[in-house]
Image (cartoon, rainbow, N blue to C red):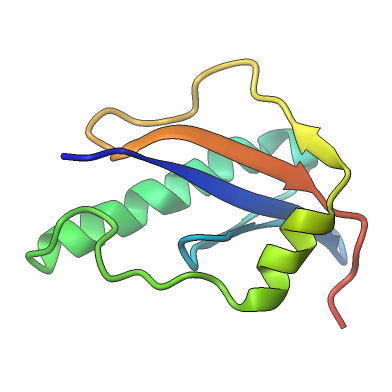
Length: 106
């Protein structure tokens, strides 16, 4: 199984933090920014299990997020650094890059 790097943008929407995948249109929510990486990786793991149950490779067939999220990611000035591994065994992910956005969605 090949592994991939996943990028995601983290932004605040109301009282919650939203974590939106870029290459994979997977989204998670967290009550505080410190919980964002783990919340996102749980959503990625859940999606991997679902695609496997559908008879596909983990995460196969999940499309990229809409373009405005990639643009938010590219414009972000702050990277969130993970201090502990939040990936899961058997998950085809070797690295996760999260960036913090100050932009609000229109």
